[in-house]
Image 1 (cartoon, helix red, strand yellow):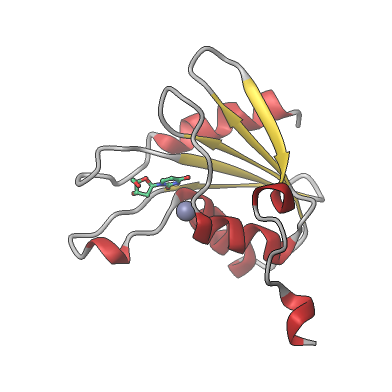
Image 2: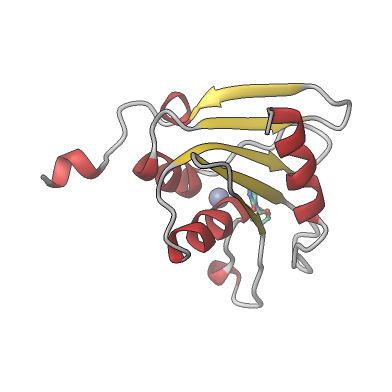
Length: 129
Ligand SMILES: O=c1ccn([C@H]2C[C@H](O)[C@@H](CO)O2)c(=O)[nH]1
Ligand SMILES: [Zn+2]
């Protein structure tokens, strides 16, 4: 699956977002190394801090289904590029600092980063060994 196809899956996942407070819907599509794709959407809560971002929903779904090796994640949010928040960046580098992070604009333009580029000098699993 190429990055444009992965972004289309993320756009579709965004339709499931539960975002009655921010009205900012986000979808994510996470590509595992064996080709399986997991989706996520943001899930908000009346107790705002209980909200979970689309990216983490996708990662946690995948991990709970036994997947830990991820190749790429596409994120679809607003009209402009929606970058993952700090907490999600931390969760992405945990599993693969080289994971490709694909973000897009409504005009179809895509940008791609490595997860570690978005969180330089991160605290990770190696610190606890
Ligand atoms: O990359 C992002 C940025 C924001 N959000 C969600 C969290 C919250 O529900 C809403 C507004 O911050 O967007 C995500 O899911 N992913
Ligand atoms: Zn986040």
